[in-house]
Length: 203
Length: 428
Picture (cartoon, each protein chain N blue to C red):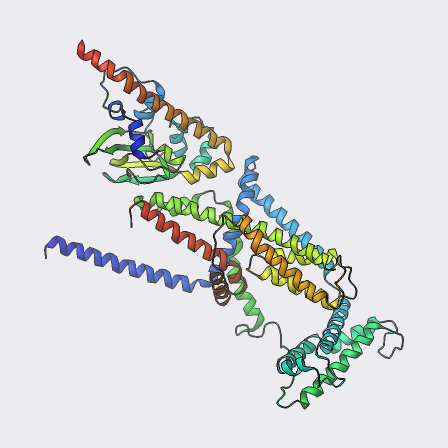
């Protein structure tokens, strides 16, 4: 499936990612972990990488030994304000977990204008599918302010799967859960979110 | 020109100058430290081979340090076992002397038979007339090389029953030695008579002839000082759990991070495929050589030995087959009786059958094994292999020969993968 097909399949993503009202219904914990700050997340810039990984949705299920092993293979990257992290249409080779700062997820509209889809905060992850298979990215990610990221390369995850299949399996399961949760949210947004808005307007 | 453009130009000039200086410095350092390149590469390759074994041990909750220690212990024990087995195959001092006598006798007799030489060793058939200018000096050198020294002769005579050369009891080796002495004497006379003949060259002065000034001790010291780094590099790389890769990638600019990840993964795959393919191909070549040599009559024990050496040296292109050929021909030269599985092989035509067997093994390797087991690995044109191996030999000696193919393969993968990724990411 190319990015255009995928875009059609993910129609509604813009609506889903509109800024939420303060009085909106609270998201379930997994959705909060995907798109919103984790209330339990403690900012520890420059702190222990292992304890940061433990707080993420992707790696939260791993045992301490597995987290230490993971911490040895991930890459810590720093970005300046406005610096591009990943670009739409370019191949992806790593998933990213936001450690500090904020990341803007944008998508080029048909007219060429960049549409802001979401602003991510720690410990959100993005570009997860790049760690599973060779995909062309359907969105772009840009740093808003100084940003610190943790990147896990596809080759690193492959190597982890070769030597420690149980650990890799846990990560992949969590990745599947996250992807499924996002899909569910998109479907709900497409079929039920619009109705809610219309009924609200009628009222 | 505006001030902004001037600033940009100055910046560009500064960057170009710094880049050129960095390149020159890197080239100078590479040249100055070239003697360390081979030890570092060899230990790196060994560490790369051993890494999966250490990781396997780690899966059983064995700490990495202990896993490395266990691996080294197993390798040391295996090396001791192999050395012990090889020592039993190495002939004693007397055995070596006897082997020299038999080899020299066999070579001279076969040469005499092939060239149909007269008793004075100066006249022969048309073939001899055609090649004598080249073959006679070569045979003279072989005679000189295999001739017994006075000490070896005393040892040989002492080892025979009766303990003297004057013994009249029939002794085949004594007869062969006498015949050898006679041949050497005749060849020396013939060489003196022959117009424009060169006198026999002096015996090689020693192992270290041609070594750097200062003699063997300083040569050995220099060699050791270069290679002393190898075990350290090996242990460091083996105990590395990703820090090296992370350190390397941390120096890469953000926009090149993902392309660099893919290039490193491509290099890893290529090296892994090549090593696995080479290992399988070497095993198959060794088995094929051993089987074919057994069929033509070389005893199984020796055929397995030759097959093992062929497999071990197969890392250098064509060397495995060359070793098999030399081993087989050496046996054919010294064999006194054979037990071939095919009836037409005899002691006289064994050498031809050995050549046929090794050629067949090489053909099977090229036509069957390489496409099957090396299909996924990097393919190099034979001319590139030959030039690369020769270049490696000129620059770094035997180890250069050994590392030429993987180095060229990795370079090819690096260039191709880098170009592909830079293009995919719109950087070129």
